[in-house]
Amino acid sequence: MTRKRFDEMGCCVASALNEVGDWWSLLIVKQAMLGTRRYVDFQNSLGIAKNILCNRLSRLVENGVMVRVDVGEHGKRYEYRLTDKGRDLFTVVTALRQWSERWNGAQDSMQLVDRQTGEPLAPVIVQNQQGLPLTVRDVRFVDEEGKPFEEAG
Amino acid sequence: MTRKRFDEMGCCVASALNEVGDWWSLLIVKQAMLGTRRYVDFQNSLGIAKNILCNRLSRLVENGVMVRVDVGEHGKRYEYRLTDKGRDLFTVVTALRQWSERWNGAQDSMQLVDRQTGEPLAPVIVQNQQGLPLTVRDVRFVDEEGKPFEEAG
DNA sequence: CTTATTTGGTTTCGTTTTGCAACCATTCTG
DNA sequence: CAGAATGGTTGCAAAACGAAACCAAATAAG
Image (cartoon, rainbow over all chains, first blue to last red; front, side, top):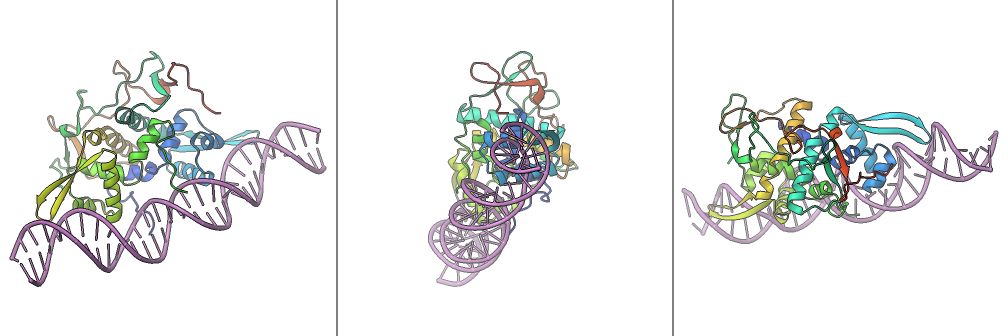
């Protein structure tokens, strides 16, 4: 009766979701991208229960998304920082944010801009090798040998 | 003691996760992008419990990510299809897939290629208006008035 | 040195969600 | 009409979640 395991479904999306697919993990990662590093700050900014936060941070560290760094300063002893793997979720988080903005309206007081130009970001899109935008209808799903992927049903 | 609500946190990412942020929803969407439309096929291909599948499909329909279409054929009475909003999650799913491939290796027998050229897709990236790639370090978080977003801590 | 405070956790307990299996109703097929 | 397929629903046990209480180490205050 354990939660279904997603890491052995032979699907990249599933194993990604196995690492960050719960309600909180991506929010923690997003918050970390905003600059939050300390336990109490995650707790206050997200309003997450302490035991859940603890559990999620441990899992993120386990999966190499974040690291726990010992900083010997006052009572603030640790910092949780994104790894390269964690920072690489920027695309996912941004795509998710923009999707929500497009379809649910911008309920967010916060906006992302290019640090250099100060301009808002371009929409995240899927592109082919030449840089042309692709929708889901413009792609094919193939197996290792390039044959079309057969779907049950 | 209900699950924390994410739709009123005043954060786009949170409200996106409120719609598709559980373990199964994005997998269902991904499967739909692969061509799956019927209840039984979702069940077989994902190995999801029937009551959970039912619940998730209802939620996805409620949130406008999918629609339930009545097709009067044999016992197969309904089809669940992606809406435009659902198809627009292609970026998110693809970014997630590529992230997993980069960091966990390709455990997937399936690959996405451009239908026209047959070539694999380009990596999904965040870009500025000029098309230059941006990492999380290249962006700033600002409020409505363009002032830097203040972080607790 | 002693006490209070901050930080980061763990424990406890009640509620909700999940997973599984069994059951049910409707629509075809034979 | 009997049987099968589809799309559910129900009931139950295990697990996860959420809130609050409790705990331990390291400072800081006095």
